[in-house]
Image (tube, rainbow, N blue to C red; front, side, top):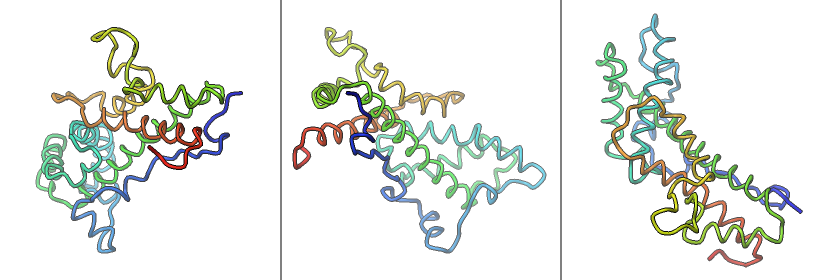
Length: 224
């Protein structure tokens, strides 16, 4: 009998990154009640606001996602020392007619919120990928199959049993299905750096829920 994690009594849910990430100073002040910003507060000129907001979503934030995806600590990009300088750099690049507004606090606040959503979406994609994989297995095979995938991070390889050098690291359908979310967000960005951070996020979003499933099905009292 095949079951999804929900039918097994397991509810996999991506952790809300907002509670785990150190937010930039302006964001902390905003959350404490002194200021709150949304898209309508971004410093666009009134007569160009609609077009500029479209550009924000289509060009500005994809560049920010691309930058975040290259960080070694993608879980804490909002507090990265390079976060604000990068926002200012991209702002001047994308909105050259608004350079004088690059220090507006709404830019940092709204971009930080978008980055939390970016991380959360990757987490949700990983949970969904694991859930779909579990649904293809018979109950008695779940622990063995999931543990096999986790051993040596086999879930990251297209052909994990192939000889060294021919396994196809980072090319498994499971990993690429999740990583495609980041690619969709940054497809039009001309990136010059390797997306190490995004790769780590995607791998973790698959590995973490898989570990939970294997533990639950094993009947052990504690996670190893």
